[in-house]
Each structure stands twice: as C-alpha cells, then as structure tokens.
Image (cartoon, rainbow, N blue to C red; front, side, top):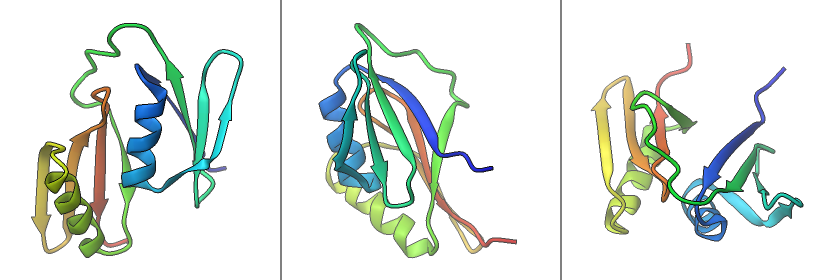
Length: 121
C-alpha cells in the first residue's frame, strides 16, 4: 500500500496549479476537473494532488500540519530553496546539516510544505 493522494482546500485553483506545477513538478496537462470544482493534477511519480476550491479563508491551520517532498540529494533541496527565495516566496524554517537538509515554505493558501533530504536508512 502506498499513499498517492492529497486533497487541499484552495481559494484559487488556477493559482495553486501554477504554484505546484512550477515548483513541485505537478503536470498541468494531467488536470482533471470534477463536478464539485475540484481539480486533480499528477506528478511524474503518479501522486495526485486534489485542489478543492473554497470560499473565504482556508485557515488558520495548526503549525505542525505540513506535507513534504523528499529529494534524492541535498543539492536539489538547496536549489529549490534558492529558487523560491529568488521568486519572493518566504522560507519559514530551514536546516542545513551534514545528515539533513530541509526547508519549509507556504503555498498561496498557507499550507506548509517541507522539502528535505536525509540519508535513507
């Protein structure tokens, strides 16, 4: 069994699609729209991200609530962190140690995203 799906409430699904496509590898060509307005986009690993439009604010969300993307090498984490920073996306937490490299940022609706590398045991 494998986790392959995450649903997120969003205020603007097109803005969220652009964000997740540009920075996290979700392919807008895979977008499927459902009658309730939800749009599902998929990445190259077959993970489905369901973006469900809501009216008003999405949060506030508990600080511990987040989801993450694992990179195979620490350089990938650093490169994405630098790219997000250059594009004006705030990095809210980061670590860069010999056995762990990570950062957290917020998506356009305030969902916390962790991007990390650590050796696989």
